[in-house]
Length: 336
Image (tube, rainbow, N blue to C red; front, top):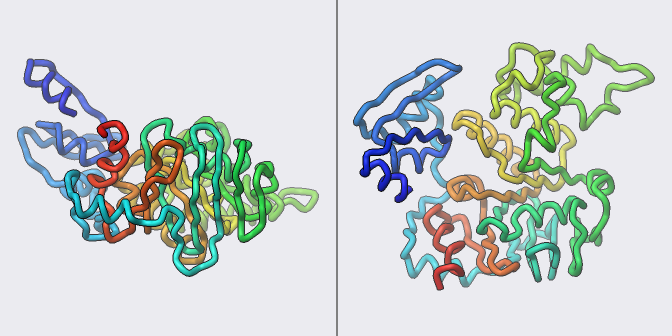
């Protein structure tokens, strides 16, 4: 962002397109807001708040997405950093964990310890290449560990294939929605039903029931679509992501793995996704979230594990979570 301001000061015109409100507010001079493919608002030489922009994007006031804690720790806060550093990396409270990772070695990970309890949302933060996605892949059976153990509800599931993990109640919403999750040439109904086809196939597809259930699902997840027979490609990225998430939550997983769950998603869809994730956790699901968006982790998670040098170096509890603190902690190894 500093480089952008320097180029602007040198006379270069810059157009920045982003769903991340903090970076837009930090760097922009003028603001143009689109909604449903049309110009919603233009603010020239203005100083809008995040709420102003979100309201313009949504066409109505969106419930606050403030961080789950009221903590305002800054990058240089010695007390906050010291407190976070003292936290136990695999702390899951007094509840028996749904997921327990011990001494895991795979890819950039060399000895990861991590646990997630029922009803808990745990985040994973780290620099690019730190092992955020690798952790989820190793749990879901996409990566084979070199060493260590992955336990699910006390059962050793290390190295089991994806099909076996799905049967045990594990679900993954991957980082690459278009490449690994969304079948854009198929309809909303077909995408939403992929995880539960056995509910409808009895030698023939029970299409009427499938359509009815999909309409109810789309309403519950606030998917904006003209029809459940609309091709998924016709939906916005946020609505596509809600369909993918809804597909997995139909299975009522015991462990939900989310990799960059709101990447490229607008603020309205983001609020809906956060609500769905928190509702799932409230019902007892354990949730593990890998994200490069530290605002997201601060707003969504009960605690965040920071990866450094292939290990869980720090755990930050909810009452101390802030994007600034997570930025400081992830950068620590590169600045020390």
